[in-house]
Length: 409
Image 1 (cartoon, helix red, strand yellow):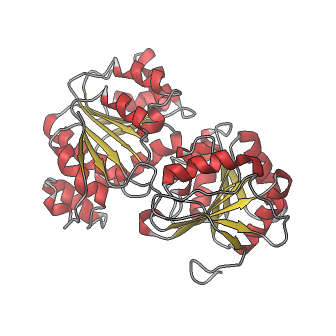
Image 2 (image 1 turned 180 degrees about the vertical axis):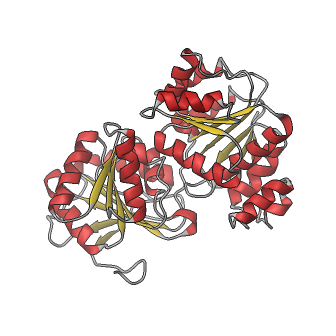
């Protein structure tokens, strides 16, 4: 049985049962007010209970499991294991945890990085392992690591970790992890089928739902253009000319990402690409360049929808709609993070009404449709009578330059 809780307003980290050393660490990095998911999840996790946490992207889920894990390991000994679906997310989780407790030994085990260096880290007996499933299995098979002392297991972006792609690897890893452990799962989307599967790995999990699964970040606005495939390039050029901040563009395929990158470079924008055909060093360089402003535009496949934590992304463009509607939530969650405003624009071809409807059902709102005066008017084959549960209906608007984020520069 799963217990469901809602999140009341908070009054600071001091009321959550966090030990003084961790409160001091949070104060040192200027974290004074917990987010709703942190406020509700931390006390439950500190009690050692299994936990399923659902909250929008960019709301502080890493510390919601990281602080309890660090504190419980300090009290009980043993090791913590955090499993993530992408290399970028592993690096991001490590960055957040090491800020809180820089003296705690941690190892990041991800593909594309030096196996030798990871073995050296493992020989220093790290208290926390942050790993992608494939590379962790490599280390297990080579007997570089044992998991019989894992007391706390976390699956970050758990819906992706338990889907058909990763589920066999997770099941294999769990054979090496003690049954007597604390298990925590966190994500922004958690379909019912995944929740049922997750519960089979857990002991009477408490479900903390700050926002309904599939809820987008509150301050992200949405816009949809119905456009033929041959007109996408021209529309992209027009949008990039309108906006002047950093832009994250999603392609469904690696080949598509390469083509989009070439197009954007040809019109004079500083651009990088990130997908699974790029080496780890290339992906790190692209992400760091995007973060520090060397690249204005980053083109990515869905590998980046769950691993990019970059402040101030002004715009997310879905050049291709995602294959799974849940990935729309993770993609657009790269903008509007930590309560800041953001905007998401999606391109849908006339034959993609089904994909658009799936996204709208997940979000429980309709995506407003815009038109560009310099492009042919397109529409879905049939009228869109969809009305979201909040009473929103799809509308058609003219394309006008807008100043959503204040002064452009």
